[in-house]
Every structure is written in C-alpha cells, then in structure tokens.
Image (tube, rainbow, N blue to C red; front, side, top):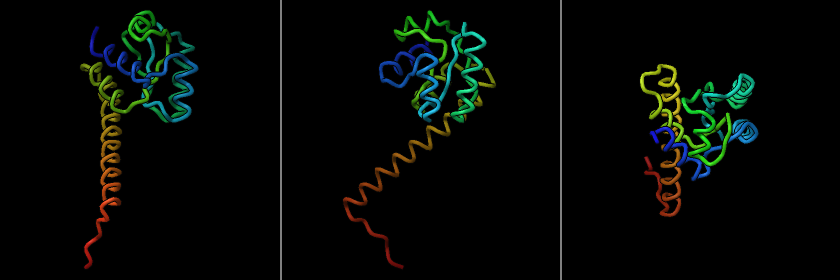
Length: 142
C-alpha cells in the first residue's frame, strides 16, 4: 500500500472520507468537502457530476486518482467512483503524497496548504482567546 492509499484508509477510519456520488455530493454542497477525488475507472458521467459538485461547493477541480474503484474498495471497505476528503490537513497530505511532479497537483497542494495553515492559525487564536478570557488578561493602557 502506498502513501496515498494510507491517507485514504486513515481518512475513512477517522470519518473524514465521503464515498460515493450521493455522500460526496452532499459533503460538497454543505461546504464540508475540501477535495473531490475520482477513481481511475470512473465514467464520464461521474466526472461531470464531480465537476458540478466542485463548482457548487467552490472546490478545486476533482483529482483523477491512479486507483480503480476495486483498489479503493479494498483499502477503504466501500466502493465508489467519487470520493470527498473533508479534512483540510488530510487533503493536503494526501495530495502532497500523490503529486510527484504533476504541476496541476502542485497548484492544488499549495491551495490546500494555505487553507490548512489558516485553520491552524484560527485554532491557535481561538485557544489564546479562551485562555485570555479565563485569566482576565487586559490590554495595557496608553
């Protein structure tokens, strides 16, 4: 099993992977999806639907995987031609492990990296704010 399949298996176990057209479409429409993926043997109709989900959810173009639906089912436990990763960090690490020298994947990886870093900053700021509220930290008067 390579890096990409490891990340898909981890995402599935963590509940951060939506598999199938219905689940992936719902994740994209609700704004929970970060990245849409297409199996290597997905039909043209599935590709068009995934592109529509991506446009509707303001996501990057769906990424065509080098894995077939059978290969995906073997490692995730469920077959589907469209998959949606709903975690920013996992989506970035998955694409980073998959990209190699592909320029299109590099652009998507850069976009996902920026989203991941923004989420990390927001979590740190929220934790600092909560700590300040508990401790009653005040601004210095001028």
